[in-house]
Length: 277
Image (cartoon, rainbow, N blue to C red):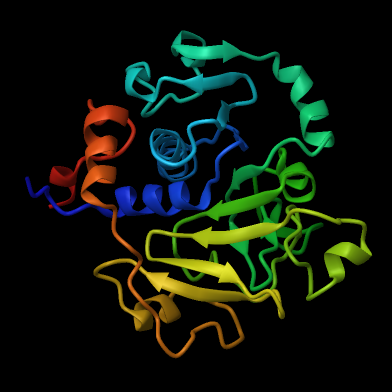
């Protein structure tokens, strides 16, 4: 049976799922605001569940530091908008004491984290503190929350944010999440011997970081998006576009079936394709 074409949220979830590996611990915090909840909470949860259903059955999903391997198909009604209030009613394999998560992170036991920002720059540094001068900012943001720990203690970080030019700057105004700072070797020089961002994922494209220069490079654009559109919405000042940019691989028929029928059968986590027409 041929299924309706995947929407961008299903594509993004599949990109994340394919990045995840077996025998890993994945950590997801909470977020606020409908768009951020969709991008930074709902999409990664579907992605983690998809990885567990396919190539990573022995990995652990840890939501908000204490809900361990929840049954995504049984997410409580209301989680689509009030994500943090109903966690205790979500069927899961176990509930952890969130106070111990700082020790788990400090022991470098978390393999993958998910983060977002108001600004991300060409080296993957993130800013959730202030736009403009720190003392007299144009905008005071939510603050670093747990972002410094994500970028310094976790094995790797996936950055997810809407693709707007104001989000993609050449240099962030404040570093709350340390990417590759200002170039190769700088993380190691300041004592960050592991971790860092591995991907920037948006509703338009996928970026990876060059192993030699540590600069963000465009890896693919999603179906229906042009390279020129990505360039117009990206404020990096370096050659981040390779000669040939492919389309982001779409979910397979089986991946779509798992997302729509096994993982999110009620359409609570991801908007259905019918809503995108």
